[in-house]
Image 1 (tube, rainbow, N blue to C red):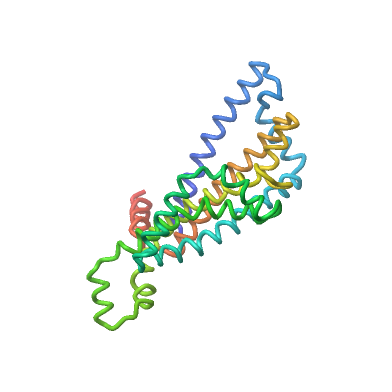
Image 2: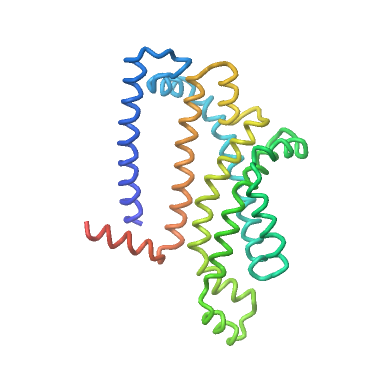
Amino acid sequence: MSDFWSTGQGRTLSLLLVIAVLMGLWEAFVRLGDIRAFLLPAPSAVLESIAQKPLFYAHHAYNTLLETFLGFAVAVVCGVLIAIGIVYSRILEQSLYTFLVTMNAVPKIAIAPLFVIWLGTELEPKVAVAALVAIFPIVIDTVQGLRAVDPAMLDLGRSMRGSPLKILWKIRAPYALPSVFAGLKVGISLAFIGAIVGEFISAQAGLGYLVVSSQASFDTTQMFAAILILALLSLLLFNLVELIEHLLLPWHASRRRQQRRAGSH
């Protein structure tokens, strides 16, 4: 656990340093160039807007996070089940796999209005878009992990009269977990993007809605504040999944490499 925090602290400090330098350059550019706020607000004005209305931004952030988590949960459950079906069924592999690849090629912004027509304008269409965007990498990485098991291990399980369910639970699933988490880390970021896309189409709350409404009223400072919060939340969600991966997979080779690097320092 300590190596995770040491690695995370190092990355966080590096990120904060880069952000501080960029914010300083941004502030200097706006002030020295005498740029009007509706074109490009200064970072100090953006942070002041957040500080003046914390509950307002928290309300919109809560709605976006709720849509993201619900959509991600649907994508995880459906994605893992679909991946298992693809691995165990040639018919599902030939049908579902091709369908998912085709759907992934379709721009989600073109599908989102259909969900509004089918599901209404409340929470459901945003959750559906988030799930649709996130499910593809989860399925692909889970299938890859389930199929990457050493055939000798599978033969050993069958020779010991292990049922397909037991082989899945005892052999395939543990071996596939690193690949599954690789898909989850991509999926949580895509679910977040999907929720925002859904809010762009139809919403009454959420950070995506706030960006669109701010653009309509030319409130550029509020728009930048929403974008800044979106960036921070995206980083937080990715690191949350990575923390869960670290807690559940302390035996993985990547963790041992981190421990060796931490020990060398």
